[in-house]
Length: 221
Ligand SMILES: Cc1cc2nc3c(=O)[nH]c(=O)nc-3n(C[C@H](O)[C@H](O)[C@H](O)COP(=O)(O)O)c2cc1C
Image (tube, rainbow, N blue to C red; front, side, top):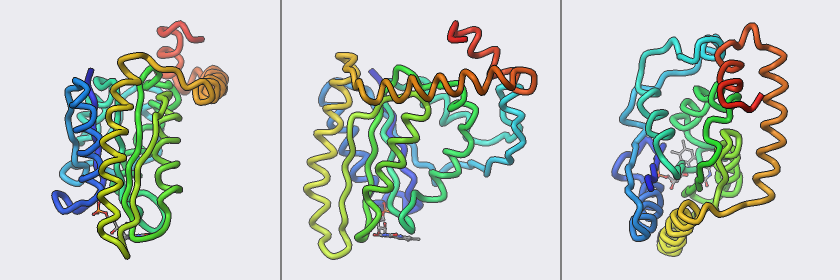
């Protein structure tokens, strides 16, 4: 069982969000998972150009580190997303990665995987950012097992409770993967979204050749 943590704070080792990503990975490790951490700020990931070449060819025209991160995501059974709250949203580093994965969303490439989200903030935007990250994983087809966050502006010690929660979240993530736990509500929302993308891809099958072929090869169309 492999679990990948992705932190998107630009603050490297000083990132408080990193502490939570690492706590999730520690919890998962304690349940026997093999873990890996990706620090997005250390990578060269360029903005999506919106050219839609990936829809047709299955390959991005940009030659940068996104493909390496995506391979790790595809290789993992579980994915932990971490972002601090930046103006009530995720960091530009994470959003840049997210925008590059529209093709993967259309193809529902993370169906069968599990994930979760962690954040830190001064005071606001925690639920918005956690919901966004888990929703993004759902959009890719993965189910999410929970979240952990802390507002630490006024009370830096609030990180401690969040670390405990994040550690437990890591255990939950690993347990869910090992037991193939079902999340009925999310699964039905994912199925509904999948049906939408099936129609969309079919309607655009000439222009979005790669996506149509992907759905056909999977036997989903
Ligand atoms: C550009 C910027 C925007 C921020 N926006 C918010 C915000 O909207 N709400 C909030 O409560 N904290 C905000 N913060 C504070 C960070 O979310 C907080 O310091 C967080 O713990 C940083 O995480 P990190 O150490 O992992 O980078 C912002 C900080 C920066 C630098």
